[in-house]
Length: 437
Ligand code: IFM
Picture 1 (spheres, rainbow, N blue to C red):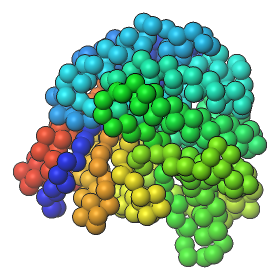
Picture 2: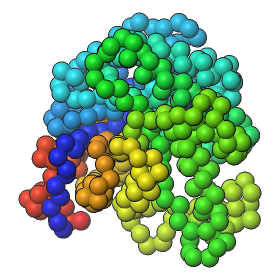
Picture 3: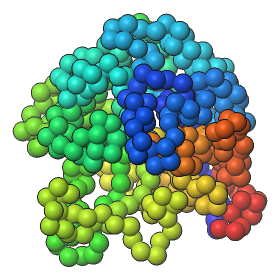
Picture 4: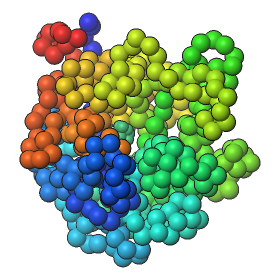
């Protein structure tokens, strides 16, 4: 195993989302969803989560101990705007304090406005299928950026819109629990428009108020590799169409404002533009695609390659995929790349260190080839509420005991901490952390 040297100026940290760690909020769509038995595999609820709402100062101390430069955090819209148009000053003050404490500790925040959850009042109005959603999200953005924009330069408007829409509107396994592709495209049009309006709003407010620092706004896109199971054209076709519908359509529309088919007819209803300052990539795994005569799955069945390493959830561990995706999308979008998520569900912590090493190796390879990957946010800081998996999906650098809310840094967390401090993986670290890999 070779040493790794990360490029000069490269920044590292971790990512979380509000609903997955904060706990204590009853006003969001996922809280409601958790109330129905069967929705969450282990019957836990995001109401408990990791109690970060109360423990955020201790958690920031852990980030500091882990030598983080960066932290990607989410805001809970339903706490900030518990009723339509009524803002909760205590909630925004809480986030101000959290962000100020990060800054005092030398950790740069990247703030996500929407990460899979809606306020219940917003869903009651029809959620993302309602055309008013765009204006409602713009107003929420306006409020948040007016209140926090002096402290925060870096923003993500919406996390993984493709995953949110496909699970919520096609598979029906996440709120709002629909299996209606037309509803999905309707909601998608509004999400794309909401991103564009929010992108403009963040720039407008920060520039009008002369807030310090360069404003950087993007989307955290969940990108996957879809490889045909073999070279047969009948498998290649569905692999391409799934890739288009799952990720290329979202990326293009949100990045440029072009509403391509089936989202629209190729025009730019909100104006042609460049609505991203960086390319946020959340990368986890690859799927193999084989033809199946079933239009509801776009004629492609997704499989995991045989005899390959997988995580606890059965997802293939495929670091080369990160390299392939960054190359491909950089060629198209030409912006600095932030790996806004990358991580592994690994309860026993037997694979995480090697996973981190292998993915960073691909990043070094990309940087050596001139692709500007500038930041890496590991998913995730601590064990959290992993949506349908509940508390059983353990992605944390730090283990969390949900009964006692006691944090324990995993061995992989210590490895990552040394990487963050040294911006390198040395032979000593390989011997210490990767010798059993
Ligand atoms: O936990 C999620 C996160 O909320 C979005 N990206 C994928 C992660 C792991 O499933």
